[in-house]
Image (cartoon, rainbow, N blue to C red):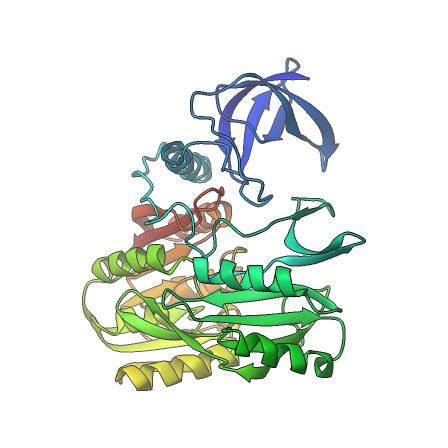
Length: 412
């Protein structure tokens, strides 16, 4: 079917209108292009991918073979502009009024920026390879390296390819830092005892540390992980602080871009007596707030993150940051604070969390988000409850993809 693509929308797809008025969502295209696409109806929406480019955009470039890089077919400057327009479109529709969004702040590096990746393993008669699955598909795309990953990670990736990925390993989680240290976790369906020898071999060859996690189809690291040999933790700088990270813990995978957001967040926060950091993780936002507030309380559900955060705060000499092991989604009341900072998962803030924030005494809310749609929804809910969106700034943490990181300030 021949289509004229109108604009990019959330999710990395371009929107087109059919002659009968129906909308279609198309992957692999650019606004302004005429393309051919095979469309299928899914959940009441026509969706598909570009099969032929009839009139290409001047912003089109040769795409990466990495299946997750759904913006790699466009110039980097155009990626930034389209991301800004997607945020503006989502917010305008959610608030039901025109909204202007400032330009997206570029990442320091458009390639080689990721400190963490988790490729899958594929075994065929021709050999064992690392790579990623195609979006919404079981099709596997083998890669010799990950063009978004640190060079140190790709060095270990090459070691695994040359030496062979051990039998039973389903995925490999890598974590590196600019100093060249690399941790990896073997995610496997076989018993941990099968990987002790290979772990020691990898460490002898220069890997900083190796851990093991049982494979679980329900999600990442449901069964925890355990160190096999070498270091379990390395240090990674995020803005003003050098924090502890593991191969399996969550930490922003683009530390250089994240540092810019944390610097801006600290500036927007102002100064005060008490601040609250919800969905705190290991406390990177709380640590930055502790520079400008007398007391900061960081709430986090994951106990291991709390432990790492407490150890880092003690090592760094930050005495005015207190960690609390708690689920922000289930708190009816929040501790008193002048400012609340939140950095929730992609699902955004649960209704109970929004109600608790609105029921608190806080006058300012710093909302960090990695999902445009749920953020715009939550901003509209807050405005209906008496808050006002004062400012927003998009950051590009994930060049070559449609993902956007947002920093916003709401007041009342």
